[in-house]
Image 1 (cartoon, rainbow, N blue to C red):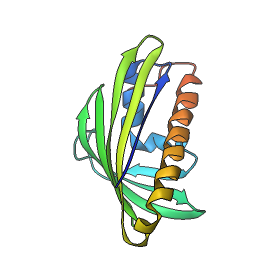
Image 2 (cartoon, rainbow, N blue to C red):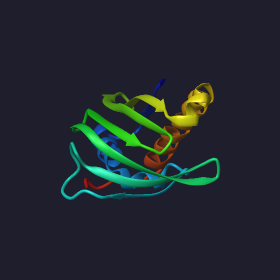
Image 3 (cartoon, helix red, strand yellow):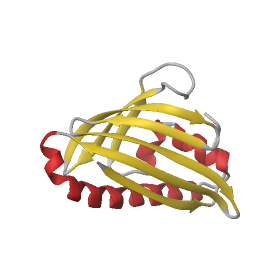
Length: 151
């Protein structure tokens, strides 16, 4: 099991950051590894909402599904992500702070099959990728001239 955690402050209101992140379809805008994401369940985003996405890993496309497991707007969002090589469970916390929103993440990654042999490497790469992912979100949201609409 690999645990990854971190935080970043984004100069945008907490509701805006939460709503943007909760809609997984937005992730390709700030995560260059994610090629596409689409909601596969119906209705508004909340517990049970499912997304299908494709990321590039080691130059290859990898399909994954993401399910929202907890949704407490605008403070807490949890999900389970299923990939062929691993399961990822985790949560995001959104707290208003002077200067915007503190976004904290905590993930537990469970490599499967031959990927288990690479657990130390998965941990190192995973930490780097998460930091880059959320830095990309920060750049994207702070670069928006006007507030983003609520989905």
